[in-house]
Length: 402
Image (tube, rainbow, N blue to C red):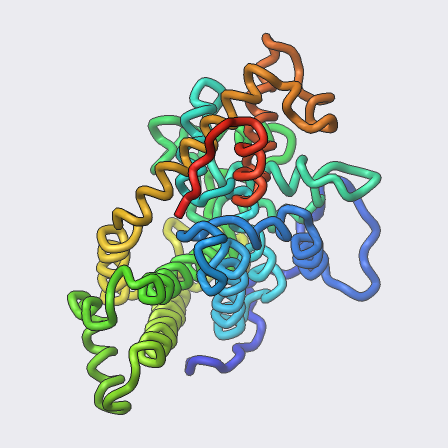
């Protein structure tokens, strides 16, 4: 299958006409499928709009051209839809999951997540996938009939399980959840609405997950180049990128660094998408699923990089970890950002009257175990900018995060 060509709809893709439905029954739309309706609800949500001022790697005020959670999310959605089109999957469900995958991220990226996890250790910890579920099932309050967005079962399943099963069939946590268990908010939710944590998610969810990997690897390279954390030639320690760079230099001798970097990112994305498309087609041919149910019952993920591309992708991650995420400039800012989140949490715990009135009315007393979780919800929903403004309001000194 060549890149860019749409495949006919396949039987193993998710069918909106056969959706398992919503927790709260609603009349069908006359003009939109259930999955298109899900996607539109995510786009119009408050949490989605807040992503424009949440950190990807660089805090929002470090420059207008760096990725934010919103621009990253839109890039994930573009890549995911391209893959879904090639594989004959439902593009609307794929887009829904791509757009919703980071709704639960707190301010300051993974630094904010680490800080909130520490603050909530005695209350179930913090997991951004669990928080995304909480956003779309409880925290969004836009409809008179229910809290949340009342998304379809398939959308909720994909938000929770896009990285694979969380338990075995007996309910025992597996994989990265084996030691600490399934995140508290997911465990609570599935008691009333079973998302079958033991099974794989749909192909659409698997596509959204791998599109996230492709997007942040390629675009973090772009942002790292723009920030001057490394140069194009410094990336040649990664064999695949050295090969792409040599090809670019042969075709465009003397190309300036800005255009060379942009061409590198484009070619890297194309290479990774093509790898996923071909490897997934190979796995589907071997597994021969005839329905979305067959995909869920399969014993392994079906959307994947080839072995060669997986090695390339790991090399890129390793490079970015050392040269970008652990760069002194980035870690200094992120350490200060963690301190901002911890300060806010401690302040609201000891002085809940500092919370906005609508949150204070739901905050419980000193002995109420839900207090910490609600404070966590409030902080997780903050943008970088609002968190900084709150810190300045409540404390005498606030780091600049530059």
